[in-house]
Structure formats: C-alpha cells, structure tokens
Length: 65
Image (cartoon, rainbow, N blue to C red; front, side, top):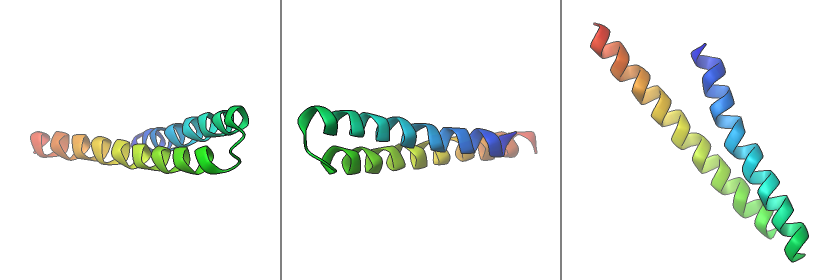
C-alpha cells in the first residue's frame, strides 16, 4: 500500500506540471521553455511528497515501538 501511494504521489505532480508546461508553451509559442521549467517543478514537488510521506511513516513506526 505504501509503495503504491508513493508511486502515485510522485507521478501525479510530474504529469500535471508537464501538462501545464505544454499548455503554456502552446499558448505563448515558446517551444520547450515552459515544459522544461514545469517538469523541473513537478520533480521537485514529487520529491517533496516522497520525503513528507516517508517522514510521516518513520514517525508512525517510532511511535508504535
């Protein structure tokens, strides 16, 4: 369960930011600029989610012991 939660919480921001970047590139006619920028933001958000979820699980495990 935890692994699927981590996978979903990592892929969602990357896909959403990529879609936003492609949309903005089409609107502004700036080929890869916004796509690359938003992919980087999405990866940053994904790692933030990863650290948040694993930190929460570690604290939960320490509390149970």
